[in-house]
Length: 275
Length: 314
Image 1: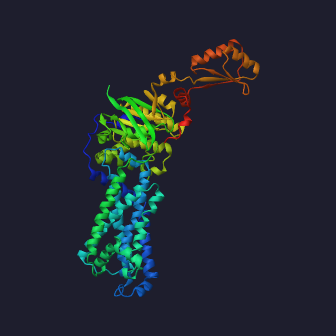
Image 2: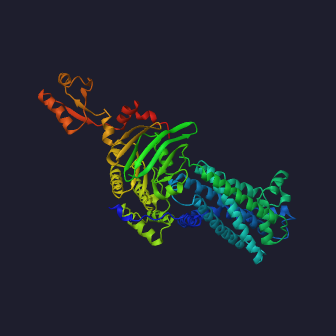
Image 3: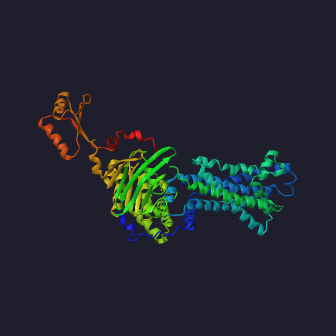
């Protein structure tokens, strides 16, 4: 064994750092994980698909009968799918937070930190990977919805808007999930806190029932939390109906949450790692 | 001679706990420097600061000519770090791990592949190259870890307890690897709990205790300061033991086990002199065991307290 073989006489020059190239390398690393361990995709898709089946088959008739007015005029599945799509994006948050936490617990991130690469590349790689995974799962869940009888009326422009909003909200939720993963002390912790994003907020919004049918306290919360305008916008784009100021609110929340999650994550990642 | 690592007045606290309390170090380029100390002495913290992973509270530190505080990226471009906890991506194969490093150093694709292949061969990982690192044994993981550190051709390599937790065979394989690294001209900064390891590999050794350097020198210089070496003589009856004790200047005796503990450096000459004296007096010994100074003796000699009292710091 001669180690001298890998050490040419001239050392490579120190190249200027390139955050984009490093993030792309990290993204390839994450995509490789994803391809090799597709259970991640299945786990992320499972919850929204189960919810879709549960609410459309089991509770669908009862809910549309009970809600009557606002949900009337079209099938409950048409009402349900847009909210489930947001839930699909949000259910990726748990995976993102867990991946970030377990990555941080392994020595590999400390290795990255002592290499001449962009500081946040490893995190950016995770975010880009998660957004790609989110878009894929949204497509899958949309497919399941179509199979169950979802009939969107969206035209080309609306579909482009839906795609754009999906990516923006994915970024927002993923950056928040990254921060939650970084702030968690253990992998278990990282798998619990994002439940707020993937479970509580979807239920306390207009995912399943219109605002007017929610109990007073919850209605007040649902009215002001970010998910409601996002769902209303997706719903308006996909199956028609008024969007109004919900569109601006949805984009506004997307931008604010993305920025907030990004800055929070950046601050957390800049801390000295805990040994 | 060029300075690879220069440290003056390094301090680090974790909350109100002092981990490093004013450390000065000077490591010439192309040498092996070992920081020797028990668990919790502050060795890992020192490596983490020198390798830009965490920041110091005070002190001036230069590595490969770059200041860690003002030019951490300059330092990062010149160093490689292998810690005691594996820094490999366990979901990727060994080859993919090596190529990932190459990509991050922005080597051309061909070069990434070539270097990965060469390193797999050199570190005896060819057969395992296409298996996920999660399936590797401890020794294999450590070898892959070090191979990854070498992809960037570092000038200064930090090895934080590179053999802790390895079986003796893997440990000796790792020592051989480290020796070859040194022969290729890099500077190695090594931490260890084992005096033997420092003795085998290092040009200079600093003993770290409670955040202070309590001694520094070559292995031979340190050993001269350690009076821990002795020979234990076992006898079959008390009369023989008494006679031997008289001849050998009344060393420490244990009547229950019928043993004498005689100070001795354990060298061939030292042992021969001892045995000759016993032979001259026709004294039969049942058994003889040589006790060479270990880290505990070093610590006891240098600090006046045994190593296990230091185990509280992390």
